[in-house]
Length: 298
Image 1 (tube, one colour):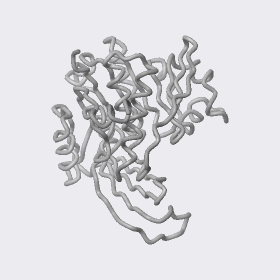
Image 2 (cartoon, rainbow, N blue to C red):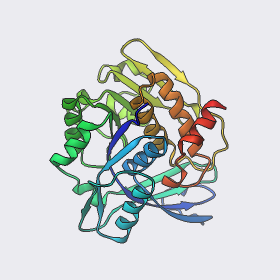
Image 3 (cartoon, rainbow, N blue to C red):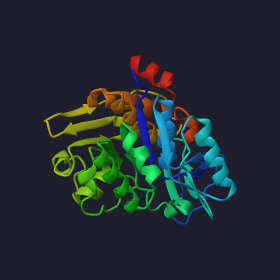
């Protein structure tokens, strides 16, 4: 079987992670347990997740001219991600400030930095997208660039996956270019404007296929052919949930690019998400293919 080609268009951030007994309330200071600094960003994380899951992965995005940018580019390349077209923008890189409690729950503040400058795709970037089996996008970069990438993929016959995170109102027409939408409950409500995140019919009116991630409860897959299936989570000991969504989405893109049935791909992605929560951090917690297979087959 040929190695599946995945192009990820998205953000790269340096994650500043503080570990504490519990998350602070507004106006409160909590004495922490530890501090970790690690490369992250939804786009970079999902690119690394896809590469570790077995995909030939190219990342399109922007890093800053600061020391964080050097580290971000090096980490992507060291994990096997093709960074040939990674842009460097004068100024700061994106930064995420993350707080994690002892139960593994987190709160995240993102300062986009160089990610804001990622506007307008070059001919070379469009060619990468056209050559891919799957394009994967998120929403930590300008939505104009997300829309441009999705449109380029659709024109070339490349399958498109949108992880609509963080939650926000989307411009008209963007979802028309999406083959598979991946959202959590908050993001689902932001898209439909409804109170019921489990209203898959409302989502399927906008896109042909939807995966709703449900944290510790696993995920749910539905499509316009009538499938609507709850996919249970794998039971593991949780250390940190920060990387779970990105591990899931990157692995899902690879599995679909390999030609797996989407329901089976979601099950495999569930294993990737579960494998990631056993470690502290973001990109360093993303599992390789062997770890995913061990959990999936075990």
